[in-house]
Amino acid sequence: MKARQEKLSARFRPNWLNPTVLKVLKNRHQLQVNADEIDEDEVGFFLYDLDALEQHLSELMQQDVIKLWFAVKANPLSRVITTLAEQGFNFDVASQGELSQVLAQNVAAKRILNTGPAKSKRQMKAFLQQGVNTFVVESLLQLQWLNESAIELDCKPQVLLRVQLQWPDGEKNPLGGTEVTPFGLSCDEWQTINVSDFPALNINGLHIFQWGNMLSNEKMFHLWSQMVEPLTQLAEQVGIKLEVLDLGGGLGVDYLQKGQTLSWQQIVDDLAKIKARAGVKELWLELGRYAVAESGYYVTSVVDKKQNFQQQQLVLAGGINHLLRPAITEQAFPAVMLRESTESLVNFDVHGPLCTSLDKLGRLAFPQDIAVDDQLVFGLSGAYGFTESMPFFLCHQIAAEYVLKNGEVELVRAAEPAAWYLR
Ligand SMILES: Cc1ncc(COP(=O)(O)O)c(C=O)c1O
Image (cartoon, rainbow, N blue to C red):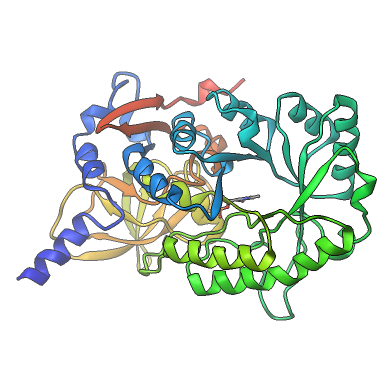
């Protein structure tokens, strides 16, 4: 009897769904701020639980081994950024848009670093003029341009060189497969420079990040351990006093609900070892999904249900126009039907509203009585959701964004019709 109850409650409220969020979603009237204007069937919305986010971030900050940056690309919503800023995170921005958004939340420019392969001289100079003083440089041209800009503006930015390593044959490089990517340069390329040729730059660190959504502490530690020797060698060869090692992001979350989670304490312990082995003063991580994914939810409704050949299908009001990630990774976000049902679970192919077979959020199990207008809640959607998606195709509505703070729901962005951007 007890086992059955547990199974039922797991179905109604899986681990990833916070009970407060569930309660809020069940009382949806709280969210219908613009009820008159919004055609409910069309709406998909995000809800970020800032209370849970705050709690999670404060746990990540309780250590003195790692300096933490937030990769803004994971979620640039103003209220998410202010929550991270209040908890003491710094910010990794990859465009002028991200920089402006972080500065607009009153974050000091000295808490911001700039990564990304597409940095023009004009952009780097503009960043310096806006007070950014830390750059991850990804090419020889970037290095030269930053040096020139620093001379012109009479400043001395801190620079980390982004390194790309090759894995032995047959081993997969998780961020770029076996491909060479534009993220940084090989040791051979960096070895052609001499840091004394860039007197306007304080080149005191290396950056490396070539893995994604890692879910095993052992694998992470193995990867990080492999980096130390080639990186310290490179620093010696080009004359860098290696003070900072930035290991990027890549800490994973359990999208497929296989019970694989990273232990943060183990990461801290492992990185303390890496820090000592590399002999650096500072070890940095730029977290994206590990910081924010679990506090976000995406909600949309069923608009059609059918059997096609042997397959049960659901068509939803929102799909990859709001939540693209499943189409590019073939990993579904976990999901649950909001209405409770004791019917047995059936696998459905879950499609969005776009005219492309790419618009599929996965094959997911729902009670067999799921029906048109039922609401679905997708978890772990706080990272790479709203801004990673393709909202314009087919002119559907832009998703609304809500936050939950001190138990209260607040609208940050109302859903917008296509007329908002069409010209
Ligand atoms: C330079 C850099 N740092 C950090 C991240 C964050 O990665 P993750 O979300 O896997 O933590 C990214 C993501 O693409 C990145 O490009």
